[in-house]
Amino acid sequence: MLTADYIVLCLLVLFILIGAVVGFGKGLKFFTSGIFGIIISVVVCYFIFGLVLDWSVVANLLIKFTDWLRGQGSVGAFFADIHIDRVVLAVVLFLIIQIVRMILVKILKSVFETDNIVFKVFNKIVGAVFFAAVFMILLLIVFQIFAWIGGETAANFLSNFEGSSLLLDKLFINNPLNSIFS
Figure: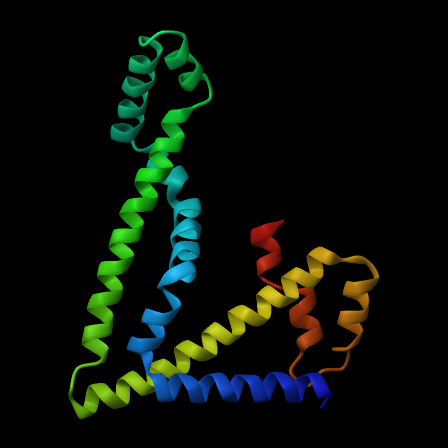
């Protein structure tokens, strides 16, 4: 095993222990509030914006809004030309997703932190799994950043993982985030 394998394993075990101590409810609250919550909402908006835009009801509303803008004179026509309707849709969608995210997190947090021994154990187990998943996502993001840097830096970074027992070299080369961000 390489030094990188030991580092990754130690960090994974650390994240699992933190997840077991903190629990799923508090961990979910932490990772979905503040800047993390905003990032999650933006990513969700990015993935569902096209679907919402294709709904006939939304498309008809956007057409009516654009027609109304064009009827407001040259300033309205300017805003219609730059597709301010889609910006408004994105902002409204973001606000809706923020509200839904906050409601879901509150519900899940209260369910998982119920004062019951079964729920307490379940909260700790799911917390450990959740924090392990968070660690893997962070690892993939770090790999993606080095892939974006590219060149000799990425090659040197990859050379540190060659022959990894955890197959970190294969994970770096076949990072699932590459297909999302390419």
